[in-house]
Length: 368
Ligand SMILES: Nc1ncnc2c1ncn2[C@@H]1O[C@H](COP(=O)(O)OP(=O)(O)O)[C@@H](O)[C@H]1O
Ligand SMILES: [Mg+2]
Image (cartoon, rainbow, N blue to C red):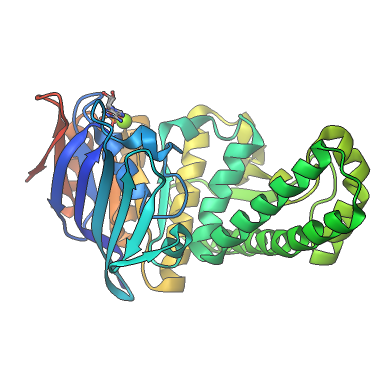
């Protein structure tokens, strides 16, 4: 089985980190250190090697090391089935991110076909009970791992929708203008929907074909009101029909941006939202692992996994099961925890980083 991992990572002026240079191998990366030491900041940096705003959805400016706020730079060497690639992500003071792959400037979305990054962070513990947006984002990150074009389709869809919403708000009645935008939205919206459907079927297959200690989640796409976009033609019709209602609302009420993800704890037939906190977390871990297995079969390597504080909330048995599955996948899983002891079950199967913040800046040490 192939590998996907960072063999080198440099952070410069990124959040609490002044300068960090790490040489790594393909094993999981266990990161420990006190609260506020800079562990999540480190894996946030890794998350920026995929399209989007990273695992905190922060602006480029927020990520610049304070008080200097001079901008920041991340660079990494990615070992992927397609070979070695040098990736750099830079933000000049206050400016948006610039991406280079192998020294060539590229749009951010180009990262999608190169790196695959999935994550779980503590804020997602409430994913099943909070609003649809978080679930949609979680879903789309998985979808993106299978379909790199999903990033571009989503950007185009959203940009076009913003233009349509502007017309709606300004009560513009030019039918031709709407038709142009709706045609574009229907086209990209249908792609988004089709990608999601296909990704769910891959996740479903990966969950049912594997022995795992984590519970199976049955997933379904839903939409509380309006039509669920199926084909391009359906969506186009729905948008046209919704124009009047949309104008009253000042925004677009139908389309894939309204889709929600409904999850059921399969063994118990209980909606994920009604499960215990621990069960809800286990469902997310299960999905991330299923995604990784499916991806491994599809592109020849598992994705990078970023699992923030994941070990703390698992009992010892589940923790061992997680480590076992990660090692069986051969994934470079970046895991954080306050206590090195949480990772003791990994032994030499992982590499260890200790993060401290003694001198007012985070410091990272490679430990045996
Ligand atoms: N832009 C920034 N510049 C400097 N420090 C920052 C910046 N953003 C966050 N921090 C600091 O980083 C620390 C939190 O780091 P974090 O990685 O979340 O810690 P943990 O090790 O608990 O995961 C906090 O002390 C916070 O003040
Ligand atoms: Mg943290």
